[in-house]
Image 1 (tube, helix red, strand yellow):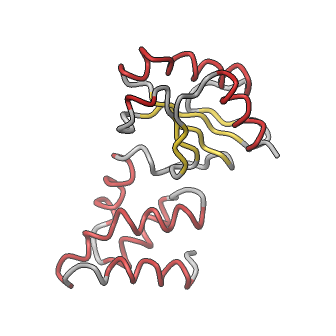
Image 2: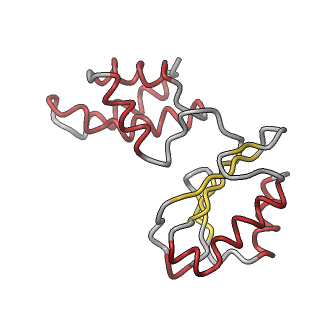
Image 3: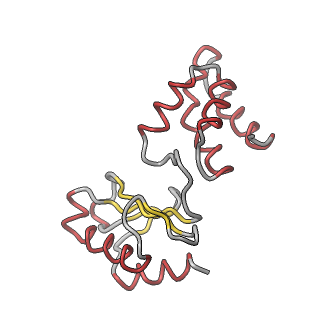
Length: 158
């Protein structure tokens, strides 16, 4: 399932650790697989487990513990809104509601066209920039006013 290019990236991660500690590269390996495939199916997690040489259940435990891994298909743009208390008190709840209203979905849902998925997130380490959100686990958006949210959704919808 994974491409040779993805395996090359995983090999670079594996090279960072001693041979008896290959499991240390599991998080980076999952991230590379997710970038390539969009989400981590049970078969993909099994493939990574076999390649790294660790039990599939251990790979699944990592993938299900961390919010950044998608263990079911998501939209083209996954928007994660921080709803921890500091962000919630500084507009995070409002920001989440603005996106829900604009997209017509709730948290953990995907738009009918498959373009957007909205999820709640844990602390993103940017409480002073609240409300904050991540787009596709890679792009941090800070100080998200209604206007900035509308502009972001318009940009992503192109």
